[in-house]
Image (cartoon, rainbow, N blue to C red; front, side, top):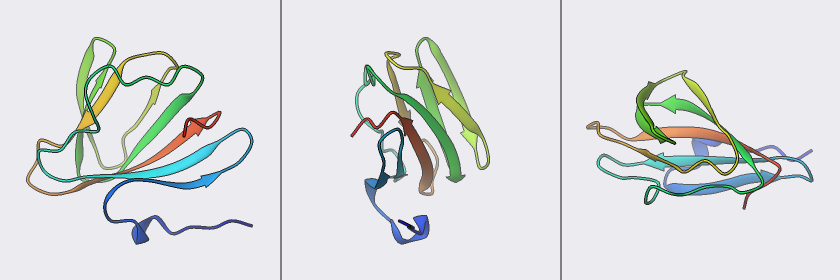
Length: 102
């Protein structure tokens, strides 16, 4: 059994676990920080993102929305996207990639 406590990860993007068909990761975005430039895509993987703490701006395809604690979104494979933090406090997300992307 491979267990990890997400509260132990405090910075950036960290892959927690990788198996044959799925992968988990945590992403911490500081105020004003973005996951990268728009256009990030996973050609073979779908990404499920859960906002664990804070608020996250989600730009997925041509849509833009603000996700709050407890909100979940699925990014289809090959869809350009990025996530950002426009708030005054850190945002933490828990992510599942299927199949693994990293």
